[in-house]
Amino acid sequence: QVQLVEAGGDVVQPGRSLRLSCTASGFTFSAFAMHWVRQAPGQGLEWLAMILYDGSNRFYADSIKGRFTISRDDSKNTLYLQMNNLRLEDTAVYYCARPKLGLENWGQGTLVSVSS
Amino acid sequence: AIQMTQSPSSLSASVGDRVTITCRASQDIRDDLGWYQQKPGNAPKLLISAASRLQGGVPSRFSGSGSGTDFTLTISSLQPEDFATYYCLQDYNYPWTFGQGTKVEIK
Image 1 (cartoon, rainbow over the protein chains, first blue to last red):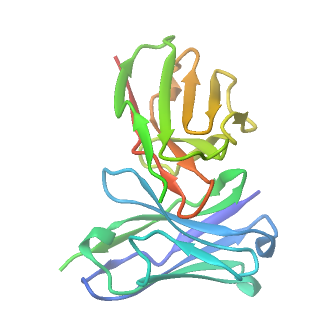
Image 2: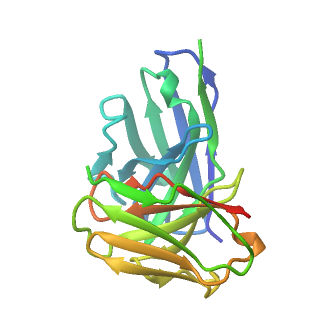
């Protein structure tokens, strides 16, 4: 069965960097685009980024453009989110998700807390 | 970016009630819309894709309709396990955008 496991969440100070990972199993990772979505505490869902199956194209939400980078390593079945210059408002649970029609499969999320 | 306006933000309903949640897009998105259910502490779950396509394993009391700019999620007879927050998501173009969510609470 499809499984997505996020890791890398931590408590970090504003301005610092962090890299999240999402390890996939149960499907042919290299055949699928992948997404990141986040949810600040007590708030709604925010779509963040997408990378095409072959890494040839990426799209970002305006709120993270220029600070976050989505990437993938198909040899490791792993998706990444490099987060630079973190802000207080980046505090959230970060989910990776696999699309088919819609975002069909989600990980359990990893918590990033940005605090001074 | 396309704005998704979801309403209501919350509602109180009883078991057995018919519940309707709407999403309006700021431009035509054809039928490129999904509905998600999220329970506290859990990841979202895809209920409906392409505006009206029920995902496998999702009870038939859930249905979706609409195209263009106006969309509806209907729960025909609310069950105890349906108390949750529901979100729409447009996947017509990037950046994808979610509605603000609708919290369905027990009356």
